[in-house]
Length: 117
Image (cartoon, rainbow, N blue to C red; front, side, top):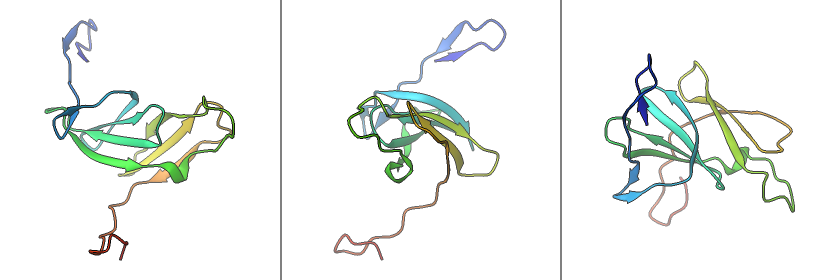
């Protein structure tokens, strides 16, 4: 929801969609490079959202950055903060012992067999 910065009165709502389907479970939000970034609660995924259209522009699988807590389903990623350098973020989660500094890079091209080249 966009709000008036002086009064906090609602201006409008951004309906987030990916390929026409509604995206739910957006949790912590941050702004970086003209994109709204959010983690998708209960998953190791981050999404970048175009604030003008609400369309998901980027999907990031951050599973390598998460902490594993066996037997604790509440230990999910739920903290996201943009850093000044382009594509850099801090990630954390419920019951995590550490904050992860991550740098997003473009996906590697894949061969026709589906294996990264």
